[in-house]
Picture 1 (cartoon, rainbow, N blue to C red):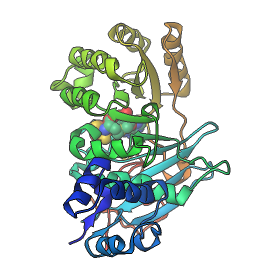
Picture 2 (cartoon, rainbow, N blue to C red):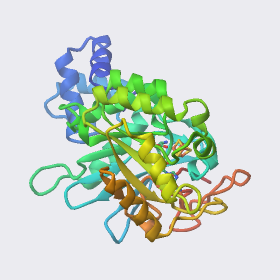
Picture 3 (cartoon, helix red, strand yellow):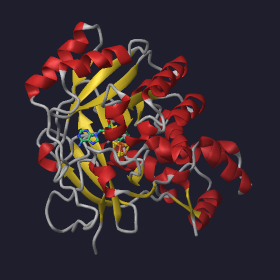
Length: 373
Ligand code: SAH
Ligand code: SF4
């Protein structure tokens, strides 16, 4: 079986090259071909000695997960669906904005954490994505999107806000993050790569040590009682511990704030009293808030807060001095709103979505689907 070179960060690739009796600078050359130039064909790597190319052809490959579909929304949002085998697929969404282009990447097929309002959670957990499957999403999207006329990459930011809990797949995540930051690969600054977590406290500390990129924390409730219900991992790592972990993270973080994500659920967590309780909760944590209008899905049991309520909630936070944004819903026509894992969810008893069935072949804007032959 050939080795998939997308599984290696710079260090891993040098070590593999060393095992083949090759020098580290050769590994660096190949790393640049693969990630800077998006080349997957060893024969096209023209400045690599022919003998090495032949060796690579015999023992290695650049194998991203195959693209199942690639859809462009009217607003420019583009959604890729990648086949990760065993009838599982994951989604990657590109969101163009005036001043940046953000790629929203998945870290797992499914998710074990079962947040009450999340369609990925509804599907249960299938498996962790490999490093190659995580970085392969960026590799493929970069190849599809290319460069701006000035020579800059179209993808300027990456957020791990797709399907799955990135910190529950730490060992495969970290090499992928390192490639995103590596000047010989994607060269993104740590401020432009964001990991979103539901709050796995010990792994937040490990991330701070291993690869401190920007951090977003899915808060969604101001009290343990409510958060236990909405984000069940809270029973293990309650709010006081989570806030302390955020403060510790900030010592290493590339930005001087944590982004708190807060999904707005009608009549559940969106009252003035909730906003005030939140202000009290985060009083010692420099932060910004990103309010996400709930993206409904079948039998979710929740409704999206009315726009007026979301604005009022935002105003309370802003008046207290916290920078607060309301996430725009994007790519509705292709079910591709980043971080809003809803859409056409299949219930657990009937977990198969027929790929051929319709143009909207999704189990959620960023949720995975099971492929059907
Ligand atoms: N597992 C990680 C990252 C993926 S989810 C996490 O939970 O942070 C990315 C964001 O989308 C999270 O804030 C998540 O709570 C939110 N989200 C999940 N389901 C949603 C829905 N139906 N509508 C709006 N936001 C949702
Ligand atoms: Fe998993 Fe995040 Fe969905 Fe919770 S919100 S179930 S952690 S993907």
